[in-house]
Image (tube, rainbow, N blue to C red; front, side, top):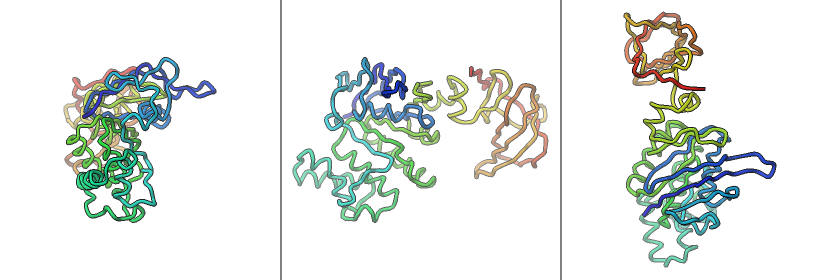
Length: 320
């Protein structure tokens, strides 16, 4: 089973008055996967800590699970699973011992504990590694052990803090796919912190974009990408081309067209497998910065002038 989690008017201040999180209300639907996305210091980890019970909100804020106020409950009584960025595995326990730790603390009988650990080893593709020391594991395997340990007690809420932050890019992509499939099977309410746009878009049913302790936008990955609330969101979630004034577009809204009305000069190109990413200097009055265009065909040389057409329906009018 999963639960609905609610932060109600929650803020978090330091003794000197600095606000890590301004008054915030966020609801996380049962069975959903939500990405808290933003730069360092935006309040996303503070939000996760409030849900976990590792931090208390300022006076007037409440944390509710399925409508029950859990604000005063310590972390061990909230029935949650957590995976930290550094995994926090026990070096004196083998893989099975790490996974079964939470069950052991809860007094689960040994036979039941052994069966549950075996199930977790299977779910996280760690079969045959139960007796291995954690210092003998790869980074990806350690990440799976941490996830299996969090899932073993069957939590109704799973919290992940930068779960792939310590892994290289290729391994992150592979484990993202594995985690997405696992969460789709288990349907546990999951909230994870990330500063990686691709990670948020790949895993999240909902994305919450944060800046300076405030929520700027919450919505599906598609909605946040196609209809950003402001320029910061648009630039943090994808690439924006400035057309002048408050007019912007995504790279896919531009295409080469000899009859087009826009122009630009190619500055540099990057081959990215299925397409080439071009950076152009726009020849449009009022346009700032560079434009980015993804091109699948012949790549013009640096210094070449391109004539472009714009999908006018894809123009975004974004306030600062």
